[in-house]
Image (cartoon, rainbow, N blue to C red; front, side):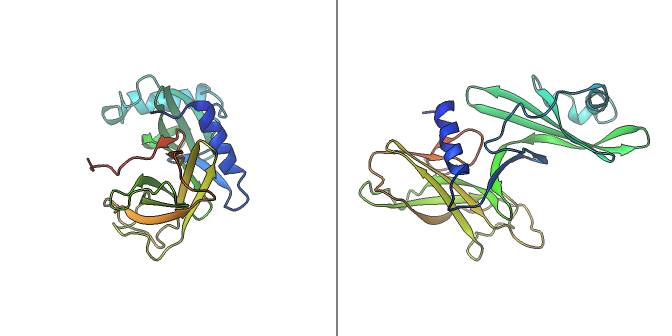
Length: 233
């Protein structure tokens, strides 16, 4: 089941207005949106300067690696100053947004590609990073309880460590028909390696019993139904 766009925007807007939590923001790799929920059309299209930079990325010295990475993407200028240019690319499909970015550094009178790749639109806040949320197969949901047991998986590099000694901040918006959660995690300080992070159990307190309401992870541009963690049957 896919949560419709209207429902998504209502749920995310409610989370953005939640007075009990931090101010949420959206990003896609190095691309920072100025609004939450992210307005995918907020950036201007490529001008001649930015188009020349992108052409260099896909047809110049980096073409072997970069060409063909972004078929059908529409590109815009996420940010530009005297030293750095960041482009945002997107393909909007029925299942959400495929995102991409391209970064350039000023070298003399031209932009030199410095980084590129795919990205997902994540929700975070100042000092807090995103986490995926899934149902916990070892702790079934009790419809009569206001406790919602879930597993979280930190998306940032954490050297494969669970956030047992760091802040974990769940944000919830509830309606008669659904419960949408965003879970944010205090990042590891001082840098970390990037192996897969473990799924970590937490319990989220709701205002009303779970009942028959649909459960969603709202930590991206497309809200997804809560399911089992990746790899579980």
